[in-house]
Image 1 (tube, rainbow, N blue to C red):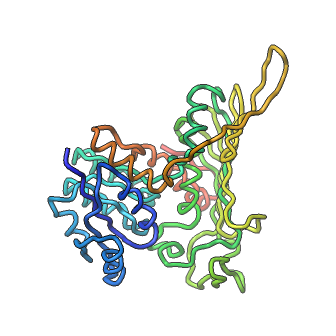
Image 2 (cartoon, one colour):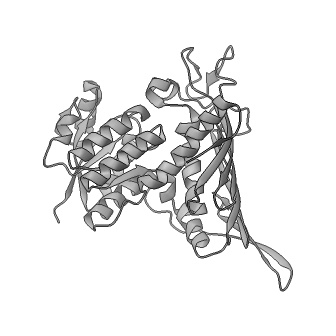
Length: 351
């Protein structure tokens, strides 16, 4: 099979973390880029030796030489761009969240089915060595049936200040969607993707509009036009009886220098913590309890890059998407449910 040709839509920001993956891939080659900023395009082209540069992404979709579209734009533009690319016969890898609403994700799945191409959500935490090591243990039965999980991803004065994050018209939401999607996707992956059936959640801006509110990133003030939540939390019920407690924030008064991302999983045979990759077990015959920690000798390629390498390999080898959109649909049902629960003032049911 000839080398797969890749075009990136949205060449600034997160796209820079994808570039090493396309460079490392033996099955793919970066050949094109699109962005609304001509300045960003020129810089991207000069730095990466890319000559196919367009301010209109349709030029990439209509290019018969391009096989893969890598979408790295703000959230609200994911669905229309992915649907257009799939309809043009391209495979698509799209940054998280796959789309800001479950209905958008359903439309993307329909476009994938109609095209016969592959669609992947770039959930890079799945591709870390620590995540894969713990997933192997869970799949081998180390925890038994997981019936309870606690997950959080918290920042202290760590809100991004760009409009692509803090304006709902571009982002679709605040930390619930931006970073909640990371820890939630990883938790559901570890749990084996049980079906969520009910959510009681809150999503509020408690600190962002206080006088003097700032982000530690550059000590920048929080813009007055900030219109998304800065904190969200939820209690989630699943169809198998399992439950999840989820907390996310950009601005929480929490003791961390940067970001605190943790998860506890509790099962019928054992418990586990991520990212420590520690497992708590017991022996009922000897009535002994013991802990063990997984040791990683080599973590592999950086996770943002690894996800690109594996998407290209899956296409080249005729395998399904490493992160199928059906799994992202369950993630977005929960995140959307948190917003709906906030509006309703109580628990909401999911279909």
